[in-house]
Image 1: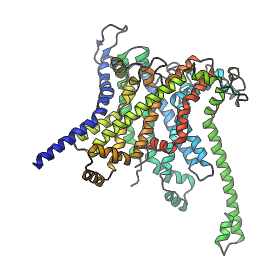
Image 2 (image 1 turned 135 degrees about the vertical axis):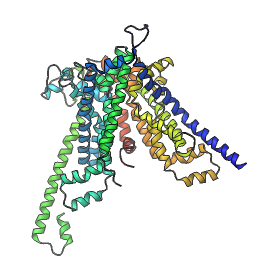
Image 3 (image 1 turned 90 degrees about the vertical axis):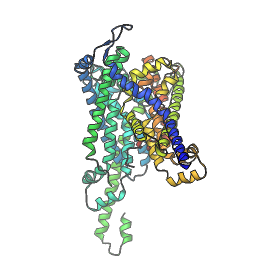
Image 4 (image 1 turned 90 degrees about the horizontal axis):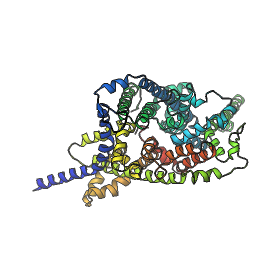
Length: 297
Length: 297
């Protein structure tokens, strides 16, 4: 008797468990797993040049063609350079501001608020601000003594750098907040003990603060790289992938293939590439960096 | 500091006193240098925001003035009413609020249900299903847009609130975060509640959710920022002002007011203000939400 009741209860519990997972699983299946897997399939079909014609199965041809094209390798290179320009600089600046603001000074709260303030800006807000300020018609740049022909955002030499600066500024607030909370998690006694031991400020930073902060930095590098590889809004608002494709990051290439060229097959191949690149990058960082992370006890 | 060394001692010599005074002077100089550095950096960080506000208050003729106007001597508010009315910023703001609310509430509900099941219920394939939830974190949303766009169009959701919100109504990250919080609920509480005749649903609503409030708040902040700042998806699933969100609206506003930079800047201020206000009010929760997962523990 009791055994039956026990099994009934277990079955009811299992039923309730599945029921509670259903909403999430439904969304994930329709909007995450299905579209993700369908990319691989779509990549096997060449989209016809005119809508209405049938899709043509080409096997791996389209993958080979696109992934070996100069268009793709340029896009890949731009994406990597963009990540290298934004992620380390963003983290270092955030950490620098966080250390400066982590002092017992009167009014330091004001500075903390100011340094966090760009967290209230979105990519769109930051890009429209910088895009307009970098516009030579607005007159700010000539006044600062910066004038290039063609203008910065149309200049193959500087466009990506300008997009990177915009991104760094927009992320600075977040970077500052993350680094500050990492610093505040370090017990004061440890820092004081190293002071008593006669460590200078630089030694203290390298030997004590940085190792204790390494989990935070590790997190910032991994998440920051993923975010950098998915950057889209700033490219769309500032350069549209130009000039001469110098800012054509992978996500923008996907968008152009999908909306501009109406080429689903190409967009699918590029999406598959973006997925694997992100995955490999994350795994590599976990492997290489995690070993150097000091998690304390 | 000098008085301290006097207070300490019977054996204070003139040399001690002199070196103490020297140290105090050095500290004061150090403080001045610190404030100077902090202030310079604060000005650099704030400058783009400041110049945006200034330009939004200028008459169109003043914007291309050289040298640029850095202080609005007679501010005009015309650009704000232009951006708000003709520029549809009021409509975009309402759309952003609706879509963000749907997403935040939806994510909290689905994540709470799923997290509860993972934390408190036993059922076959629990581990596998949890891994399925985590796997969604490995798929960047950008990689799913091709098919999601088709799905949304087929469902008749193109250019609707449903199209903007439904794909984001579940979150693997949120389920993970809340599960961790639920696992921290003492088992004794569950037993006591069971003795009181609490079923799972009542226990979840009355005990587990209130105890997990910090994690809930962190998730709310995290989803809010994610939903509010979305760019790529609203760009491709909306086509007119009725459903455009603030971020995409800003893009539209800039395109339609190319020769009225002050209107664009007024739009930027309108778009950034809601987050700025929330940042000031909820600074603590915001920091916790942004750093959930960043710092050990």
